[in-house]
Image: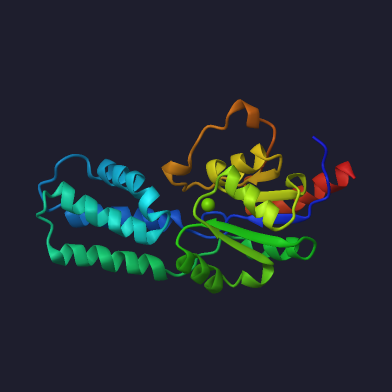
Length: 239
Ligand SMILES: [Mg+2]
């Protein structure tokens, strides 16, 4: 595939630049521990998963929707026996998740700093608008990004809209992220470039098998810090 000079490099945020899924996993553990004292109908983790999936079109991605899903699941699984004290504990848990300390991945800052010296950078993240902007503010990385897009979902149509809005050709756009489903495959489908940086903690919802049509059409590195070197190598090899 011909490599054209890049006009924009975009980064996913959650679980690409900073920890995110860890807080959800801790939240799920606390949720299960809190409800362990009740006689429960069904497998709590599976019930919560199902509630979250059912609620995604209603609340979208992010902590507020997760909080409502925990409360709904708690009521359902305990047949309405869950106490208001325990509901309050779930509300408190979600507030803690919204204000949790930012934990940047190793090399996150040097990676975006190095690339921002050469390319305009964009952050593309999905989830709750207020929470995502607050995290970017607290991350210390905001100054490296020329554009920030907080979107409802990440599919090819949404990426196509972003490209149109910023007058970008797909072939000159590269996306970096930890989710094949959200960051890599929809961009590749448009003819864009993508670098997949897998994370050991990735939400099951984001885990997909890449279709054959995507094979060989994106790059993969083990660590975020390898991204600038790979881009440099690809740019010089083909120019
Ligand atoms: Mg992510």
